[in-house]
Length: 64
Image 1 (tube, rainbow, N blue to C red):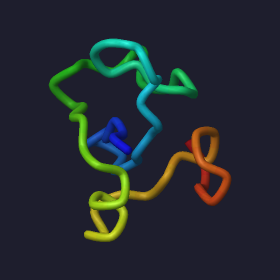
Image 2: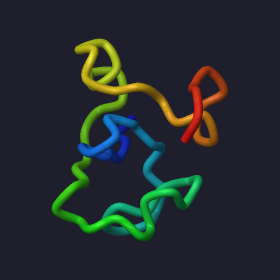
Image 3: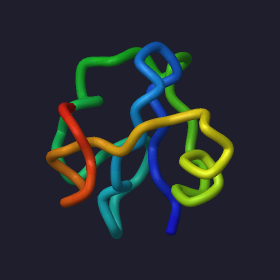
Image 4: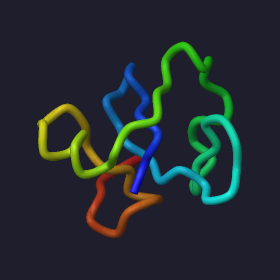
């Protein structure tokens, strides 16, 4: 599953299925410039220690 990584906060969000660009399930990235976001595989970002999961998008995440 792909997610949207906020490179400023190192928080990974669930990509809103069927939506374009960087829309997320929680909507937290709606106001962030696209230059600070990228689409990446969720498990890769988390396992690399690069990111934490969003608490609104993932039950095992923290914060948003």
